[in-house]
Length: 125
Image (cartoon, rainbow, N blue to C red; front, side, top):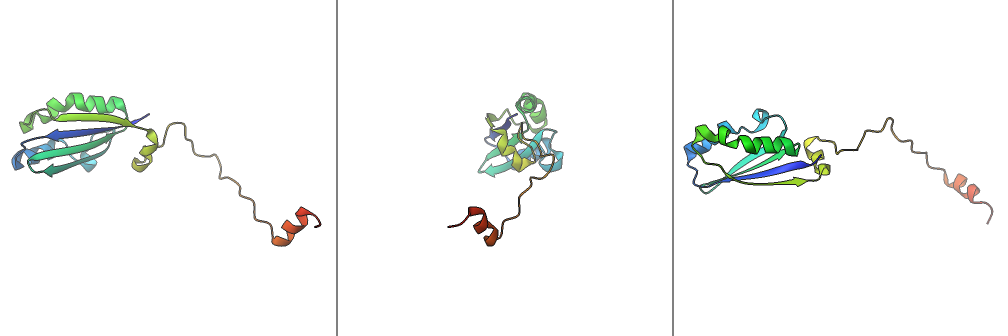
């Protein structure tokens, strides 16, 4: 499984539209299932969004539903750029990489030998 990062950009967003956008695409606990992180920021009259999705299928569904989600805001469809990153980066979001399992038990680390035991194991000089 790969993580999918989706970058969104809206140009010419006024403060009221920004507030509507925040309600339509809530951050934190209001994020949809599969959305591991969501962030928005204003840059002049543009709004830039970054989302991290748990898999490609969920990210595609989100992008496909954007028109319906954004209809109340009056904003058009944003510029969308999406790319996959290796699942090893999912550790930051609490996602275990595919094929990595917890060990059944903790590894056994032997106790270090004392210097005297180490000398006797090498034999006479």
